[in-house]
Length: 289
Image 1 (cartoon, one colour):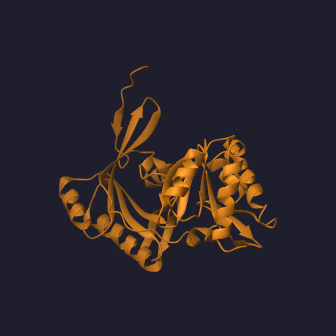
Image 2: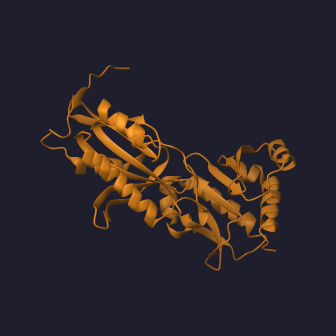
Image 3: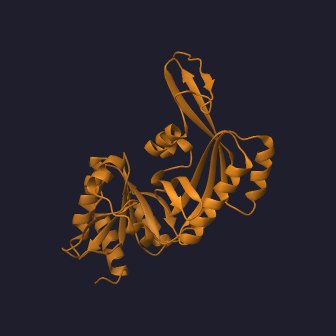
């Protein structure tokens, strides 16, 4: 492994780099901020009588939203106020979501770090310091969280369903193999209702009957596996039965009443019997019969 010497670069003073360039890099891959599995919801979002929000991001597996304000150079009062103002506007307009204010700056001074920390006692706020590093003709960005957020609650998954996508979106976000596993699980579910189909939403793949959500199971394809989430009452008996069958049970989502089960490619067929049982129980519990 070769050692590379990196040179710190000021984006604010660089002749070719600017805030738009930073926005583009984050929009291309929001995960570089270090906030987890997040997706771009909007950019340059117009705020009533208050300018434009640089980036609106959303957690891929919940309805947590991040209002992101980018500042080149050192933090100042106006950008901190603007960050909080945009956060406040968005949370009032869309109270069904959990909102977190995020300020990204090249230099967060100790003075403003203290101010931000005080705000964070009442406002869910994240401060991220951004550094541009150059090696030869290549420039990269490093993001370091210096003030972390306060965790709030989640909202209903029905809000996620308002943002439809398509199969290609999920094949890019997950993989063709894991989306094909969704087809296999759908075929098992169709034994109870042949009219069921997959409904591709931005944050999960659900089921639909006559165009309406019918989510007794939801599916979340990843690159190397699919997360299978049947809606079932939590019980030690069910937990033991799933684990005894060899299923990789991640945890139980008590908020939405779902088991979260990781399935690798090939495991739908090898675990078909227990999956048929689980899907049948989830279908019956949904009152669709």
